Length: 230
Image (cartoon, rainbow, N blue to C red; front, side, top):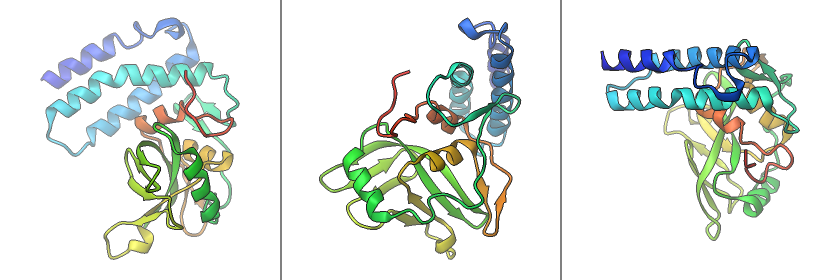
């Protein structure tokens, strides 16, 4: 009952508190609705019995949704992305093959040695049994002396040697690994658009989580080396 009451109050005041891009802005409202519905579905499938986590996620939802929607409507950065208002997502033409598969490791390592910084938005190539996709993540810790960076979701990567991949501890480790990539326009566009490839061809894009949508609004498309101040 507590969660339902909280959800009801949140929805009631959702658009009335949306600020200068409120209910009178059709695109803003459409994006908010799409993001809100998508995140509620994700929360309904969250495998946790911790009510406090659900309440915290629900409580912060209006702020995150409005922030993303406001950026998508008013963004003036040199982004190559288009806005899909109906689905509350980014759109870019999907390449036939996953970008970054043949990225030069040494070039990538040198880039991270030079540009590693707290809060930097970076792409991670995900190899799984289903196929390939690129996720957005951010650096929350790093040790320049040891050449290590820690990502908020995907953990530690060593950029002091020619190994930027980590295999999960499964029988199919070759198909369950993460690879830190150097951000490029093609790679970041695919990450923001949720592009997915199986091991033969491209397939249906995935919906980004609210966390990834928030990260997508912090990308510096000019050089990828710092987080812009919005």
